[in-house]
Image (cartoon, rainbow, N blue to C red; front, top):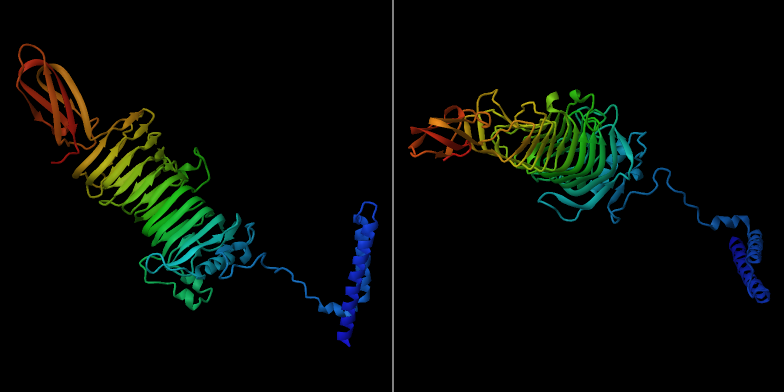
Amino acid sequence: MEATVEGKALIFSMLMGLASFIVIHVNGEHSPVGRFSGDHYHDQIRKMQALRSSSVRHDSVSLAPPSISPSPSYAQQPPAASSPRVYHVTTYGADPTGREDSTEALLRAISDAVQGPSAGSLIEGIQNLGGAQINLEGGNYLISRPLRLPATGVGNLKIHGGTLRASDDFPTDGYLIDLSASSTSNMEEKRERSKDSQQLSSSSPYSYEYITLRDLMLDSNYRGGGAAVINSLRTSIDNCYITHFTTNGILVRGGHETYIRNSFLGQHITAGGDHGERNFSGTAISLMGNDNAVTDVVIFSAAIGIMVSGQANILSGVHCYNKATGFGGTGIYLKLPGLTQTRIVNSYLDYTGIVAEDPVQLHISNTFFLGDAYIVLKSINGVAHAVNIVDNMFCGFDKGVEIVQLDQTNGPFKDIEQVVVDRNNVRGMNIKSTVARGSVNGKGNSWVVDFNHVLLFPNLIRNVQYSLSATGSQFPNHALRNISDNRVEIQTDLDVPASVYVTADQGMLT
């Protein structure tokens, strides 16, 4: 019986549609303008629809497909395996307003990205995630514990486009983003990992490769640090703003080739002249690994701008005004005595300077030192080898501050080779160099040129060149007699009026 009613309803509906076509066609032919007017057309359609609805049994409504309502939890579903690998964190329930804790939602997005399909490998033991992206969608997210990857042995992943802020109960020794293998157990306690994700942990000597952190603001809320990169290869931190840290803004330990560029770091948000500058603490960037680069970075508040304790690093285009030397701050601290291997070029040390412990293979050039900022060579075991401090600019306040100074608290420098401090231009500070030039005029048989006010190392002259120009009818025999205490003495066998020109060099060793 039900099928018969449905059949009748279908036939009736078809007849009504045919009738409406005939009516429309007839009226169209007799319309004054040659076609059916808009108002009359809609009126006829409404009448036909009302007539058709009234002729269909109410129990036939159940034949229509149920309406589909959107999910109350997600605006869109996380990507399937065959979908583009962009993980929008709000689809996992993250709160972009920063009012609610988004830790779990962000970790779910990270876990899906890491456990998604891979395409081959990068370095041996590192699976290629194909450029998967965790998109923060310009939101401000509150987190209560560090964001870590659930497994090691993965690479080619990017986290970008938003703000992460530590909650008031965030661990004070944690980092907002923590790329470390040693701490993954915290997440494993929360979630059961699949067999595939377990296989991601590999025998590679590195935990991760080609992880990119970009376009992020990391606000540590004076609890811990910003980002930790541990034993990772080819990590990129680009266009980030990291603030309110108490330990390190960025910590790099082990691994190779972490590139930090186009970023801003400061414990306190200021633009200089802060009344609380004496109390600045923490380190903006700590490089405890090799072959890293910091390029075009501004450090505007911290006790130490950049701490380097790994070799073969380069700093270029760095502007440090983190904490003035007069308040106990250091712009760049090189803490790897005996194996520095660091290049600092094209940078700007603004009221804060550089300290290098037992420097070996250190190059500082084309850098501007403002506000009596200077360089300190600090003796640990008394070694200074292959040091170039050349072609820099120094500007001060005529207070007698030397541009390069020695800290020999732990003992004097006694092993000095190939140290060149030269060709620096100085205004309002006292020049120090390993190459000095001087002259003396007078009549007699002994001429002394004192270089203590210029030469960097005490009582050290390795090479002397001089010329003597005598007037009168006799030209005397002459010789270099003494170079002790950084004083050069030239003697003649006759008393004559003469001018003596001397160049003394501390850096050469034959």
